[in-house]
Length: 224
Image: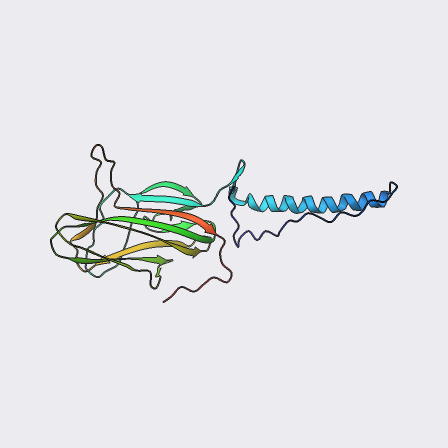
């Protein structure tokens, strides 16, 4: 069983009460005190479960972690060199409290604050013989995250290179992450390849998102 415990759901520890010792003979006052201690304990248990159930977090016998999986079935190109463009996704496979922001194909938004693990992969294709440098980086709420860039070099006409990496990042509720890319040559694409038996199709980009921990308090400041 896995649990969502975030700064939005500050759940006090629920510990068993210290019950009063019983007298030798039946005593109304003791019985009332005993019942009150149990009543307070059960009220705390009810409050604990109620907070976990907020936003439908509980499934029968299970508490779900937020997660998402998004991919793109179309090619992605660069219109200009040395310019950042958001990497896009046109298909959703999983979206449990994690979704593409309304009217956006690049902004992945979370409904529950916490630390999230993102796993990204992209299928680069070189369309001419020259070597070209490709950079991919992370932006949160429209601001690039310092030292998040990965650099790749690809060359050769019709050569392919798969980029794959993952990272953790803290997000408050309704914050979002985007992946950006750019290159010093426009003769490179994020290519989607149709299925060809016995192989299934290749997505131009894929990203998965999983909740891993509660939101830190205080939140860290990302490097510039």
